[in-house]
Image (cartoon, rainbow, N blue to C red):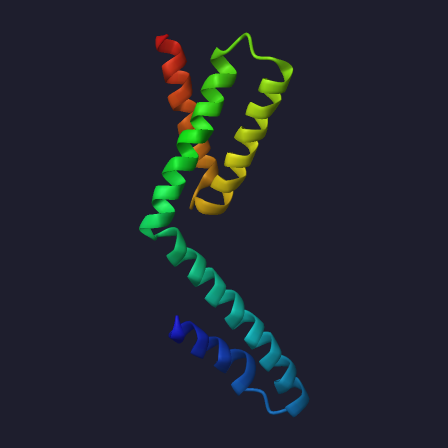
Length: 119
């Protein structure tokens, strides 16, 4: 990452002779550095074992909510609403914690569909 930062610095800040423009470019550079570091931190967080364990739990709960919605015909409106809320909440958490949340959701949907076709 440091190589990227050095290249960006040279491109945005170092080559500029005008002090005012150089100052503006330095602020732009600092913003880019901050975003790169946050992105890098997020990527490393997604690779942590604890995050993977948490994501496995979330995926299981998401799938369970889908299964219950698909198989329990005698749910009250309140129970059905609560399950939809759970599904949306766990889907939102998957959006935050998964590298490819849409693919994860498709895979879980396929697992539920497979289960339902065997019942």
